[in-house]
Length: 375
Image 1 (cartoon, helix red, strand yellow):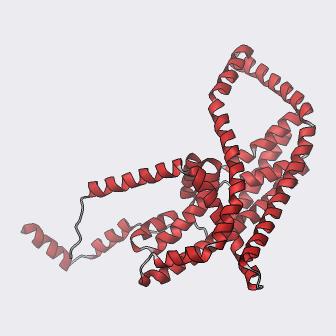
Image 2 (tube, helix red, strand yellow; image 1 turned 90 degrees about the vertical axis):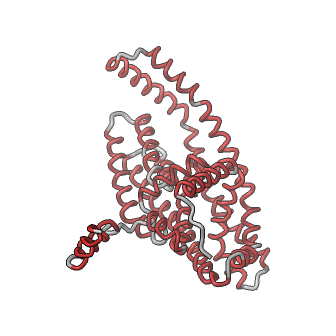
Image 3 (cartoon, helix red, strand yellow; image 1 turned 180 degrees about the vertical axis):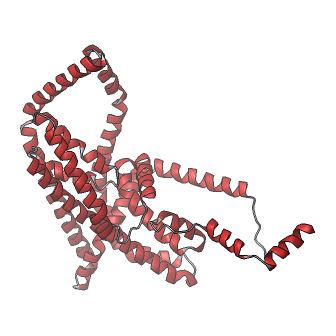
């Protein structure tokens, strides 16, 4: 039976409508989908530990609780370290506040003398900016409250995913035809491997970058170097965007606590060197061993993830695209999309290949073309 061929404009309209519906659903269901997405990633990360505990004849429920306990202890240790550093930072807030007022006054005088902006006009512009940012502050508070909700829901979701893992895997096998079972198994195995290698590589990268940042800031004599170095490493997890944001914090701290601009120049040079090491040594060898997404797609999906789900969307964007690439590479009709997401750049595009083939059809081919033209 011949399949009915629909016109291009009808197919493109249906595809566009499907994309719009998908984006609308993702945007409106983010409070439900974000904790589920993080729970799936963490459950995949804890799965080797869970399997190891089960292999020691430990009951499944106890093995899940022990795996969750290990994850909570690691996460709690990181939070304790950051909170202790922030507590030390808060002790000197009054001194920093006075220094910041002095720097702000010097900046106001500089703007008035060089650009003709009176101090009253500058205060008016600042008030307008504060009024315009009220919605941003509100959304930030909502994000913080949503994060607290995620922290309470995550253990429940992780427990459920680990406990019902056989049920979910069997469903994924049974929902497809039997002849596709081998391909489904490959997709599941490689998806698990890609997420595990990406997240573990990301944590290793963050640890190395935090050590490099803190060392550089300690050498330059910047206050709270360890805290700023760790925050910079966490922000650096946001591909191509977090590194730009992270450099502003130590520069601001150096501006408030030190005279002159030599420290700020040193911070810029140090962070440029660290970013070079990160992008050319750490990321290719540690993070990108399984997740081979090109830079253009990485930037676009991080921005789109931020627009849809905020900061959590930025963190989830790269693993999501990595899973999509694994699926695209194994579905015949979607292989071009998988190549588009990857970082392998062909030496010749298809137009050049087809042009070469046409040029080779000389001789008899030209005679045929002339006969066809005469007819």
